[in-house]
Image 1 (cartoon, one colour):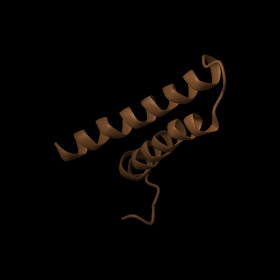
Image 2 (image 1 turned 90 degrees about the vertical axis):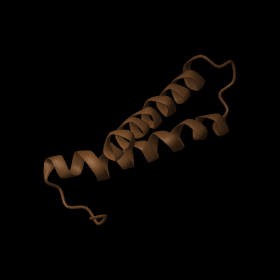
Image 3 (image 1 turned 135 degrees about the horizontal axis):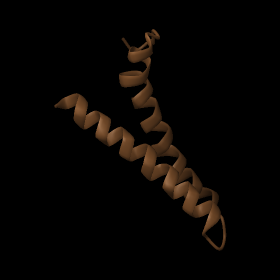
Image 4 (image 1 turned 135 degrees about the vertical axis):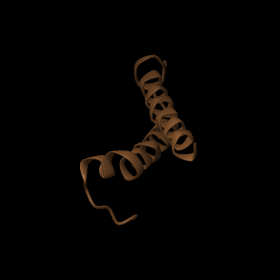
Length: 66
């Protein structure tokens, strides 16, 4: 149950962050760097969590975390 919750939260971070960046870059009247950074941060953290906990073990890549 814990891994499922971690997977759902990290996917939501990636999708939400990328949506925020996409919206700011393509739909906003003025692109503000702070708003782009607010989207990049959760997307990066979510991608990191996905890599460390799900993708790297599945591919057999050793990480420093485990």
